Length: 489
Image 1 (cartoon, rainbow, N blue to C red):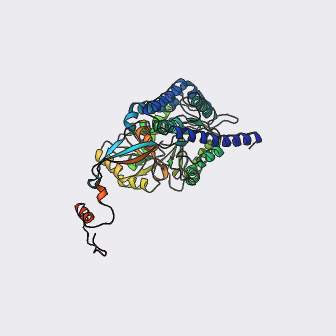
Image 2: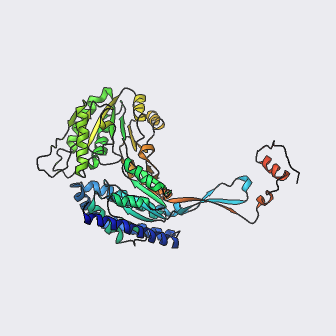
């Protein structure tokens, strides 16, 4: 690292501690923002996104070296706008204390759950949807009444700088601040005694974040990824399944945590499926290198990683089909990698063990639905699972016998944009959830409140214990068979 970069990093890490202290002090002065204050903050965030939507598209395009305007508008802009609007519309209901049943032995009393702001939260966002995956969690944090430090990804510097400018234009840094920088800044943020830490990224980075947060017992939400399967039942129309697969897999050139990572097709429909996939890919992307609808790979490291996955599979006997060939010309400054199918796969290949995160699709076969379910269950639990079948009984069987963060039936990946569904992983794909009410709950402390009135029968149930207490236990259905050893009161 150059000395100037080192100085910038040290400065960012040093400033981070000061921002945290200012936010903590500000929260101590305003521990429970009312509905009006939270709604104003959400509207400010909404206005910032809408006012900068064209700049967002331009910044993301520049960082990727080419990404579809339409895709950025759909996820990074509309995705955030949808979450904010839904949160504003439902915030008052979420904030309302929830009444709970009071057990007979505690009557008369009132029991409620109050959702209390946690305090100062940290949000570490990835590069693939840099606005959606930073401002989406921020929406939930603000709705819950918190203050937040957002760490965008250093892999998308233009977008990260824009996020910092957008947020500083509407919020003081004692409410919302942006921590710009690389891994050192992310590590410093996760080491702070935050009240909650929200991380989206790789499993390896997630482990490091958890280790760091554990020093302060900071609660953590991890949004990871994994190998999300797409299963097509033998009886389902192949063209319909393939259309949704192409849309879900090659959106953003496969650089989506919920993209189908591999397809499972019945052996009898395999060749038909592959042929239809080639046909529909060619229709959607007749060319790649000069096609603004098809995103570039974000950087050279990820581009080379994808090439290595393909080479490893080919070396181990896989049949690789470059549906739209995009061989890089000498000296060409492009990271476009066209849709690539990997056939005849097995578990020795890295492409069947590692998350792909690119436009490379392995296709495996199964002989029965039970075998397909077993194939999925033998692997770490994925973030998404996509099953194509019009038979509700079989769909229910897949739902009940598999485990994943989320599921789509006859769709791929779009569940993530439904504002009122919780989004999160399970097991190796992460834990915790957010979006709308689930996000509000994630960034809130569910505080149990039991309120007694003027009459408190429990005053009769105090030491020294005797027959009155025993009769009370009998009323509760607890039979007392223990022999007394002391004098009766």
